Length: 506
Ligand SMILES: *Cc1c(COP(=O)(O)O)cnc(C)c1O
Image (tube, rainbow, N blue to C red; front, side, top):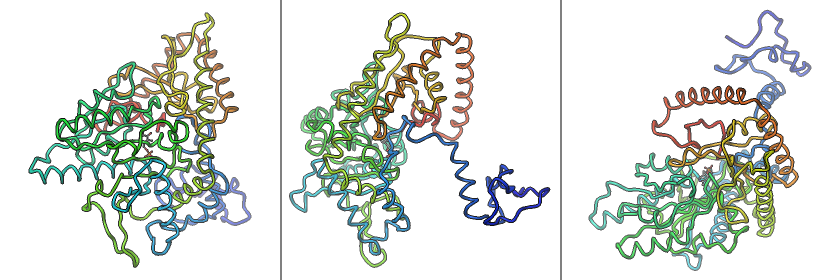
């Protein structure tokens, strides 16, 4: 195979040649399946890969994701400067370990963890993201429950987690990897955040954890954690149980404390035993950092903590990985130091007002008969939930939400269209996540393009819509068939595979 076009005189890969004059630029398989034999210059390798990556969407226009797409130059510089350090080598890089520890302290206090004395102190760890943090939290809860049951001479056969079916896919992963039964509260067409009473009713003696979501991925609503805590407390007392709550604050953990400081959702509630948050979402750091914090040591059984004598000093380790980059922890610390509470507050308040503005404008869009085109979904605006706008078509049209997303894509905007969580899966919606770099000016441009999109779609003949819809469905079916071969057969959750990952909602 080889990439060299032998019919041409292979130009020496010298510092003088122009990349587009080499045969590298005239081949399409330089290194796609097998490592090539020859070296190439760093300049050409850089250009080759850079050109390939140009086909990616523009991160700033990716309104599908919560994950940070902007950091200041100084933060990027610091991260670049520390790229060569392995985070695990605390003996060699003690300053990095110290910075992680400061971040954990900052986050634990932000979440009102008890810190009075050493025995009752909170513990935390940096992870690759909330998924790792959640897997660790489920593991800790499962082990704690097993220990408790064993001590009482009871069966440890059938542990379960009680949660809303609108959980992020990592909860299903955690449950399946760690062999814990998933007990779901299901959304309806009008209610997307768990009903506290119905959720707590699912709890039984085998429940290792109740998951409460601070900002569901679908509509950004915060679950009523205070009420869940109260009802669970009553149930624990009445039935002699000892069930605790884990708060999935992947998105809301760094939003609520600033945009809605009155909301009581964290360790202030007695049954909240652990919390995760994604540093790379509203923690404002590039992808690769999450946090898990436990109320105190009693929620982390000793058997799952490893003391490793590594490179000269004993360390306690509770992570899934060993070696990893430490630059994201450095980036996270930069944001805490740089912004302070007032910086985070200003940003979160701006995002809240931009999402409120955008929701109001989208709700006001009318068709030619003066009827409202869209309906806003979820009760998340004005800081009550995450700064995002989820909406759907108010009535049946010749085209659907997926067609709107496709048309917006042709203007560069990446907006996901997806179906609602299980049992409310006929509901289709569009969602824009308002992130730090989505300014009001950009929101205004987006709105203009949305209005234009609607005009275009409204004036397109129905037969064209029908053709596009069929083509889209065919593609989805082929994709779903292909992915079912490799994944869990019963996945019918639109954010998790049924419609593929193309809409990139996370
Ligand atoms: C994003 C998200 C996750 C997964 O977090 P990662 O940091 O991407 O691993 C889990 N739960 C919720 C609610 C999320 O929004």
